[in-house]
Image (cartoon, rainbow, N blue to C red; front, side):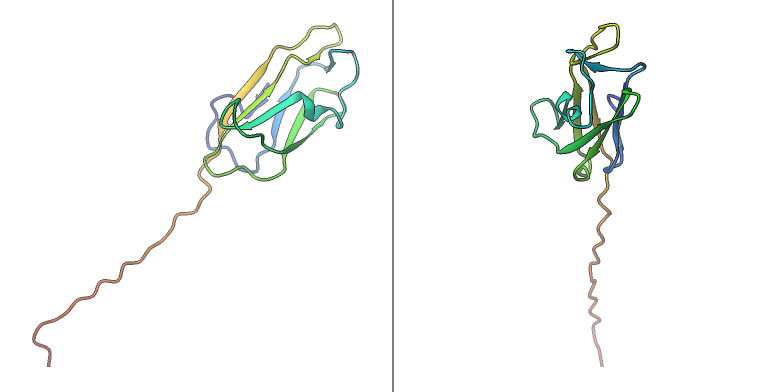
Length: 127
């Protein structure tokens, strides 16, 4: 399960993205997933699968069930984000996961601007 879920809107620009598995996972070659190799399992892009890469550093918990994706920089205001984890992991019974993705967008984080228009009035017949 990916959080934020597919179709989510108004996500905070500094959100931590997570991928949760209901049981322990490992690589398809039966080796452990570590904080060193977990980044290579994830695609994180701007807008869609063809968008520019978004820089991140991922970690996996000690139970090998929760991947946390920490962004190198905050996301932009009203940015659409595409995240994918492919069929590159399996459980201890060799059941590979299927490709899972989510597309979500951040909220408007730009404060409103203020403009003041001066109104000049001219009176007739001044002294």
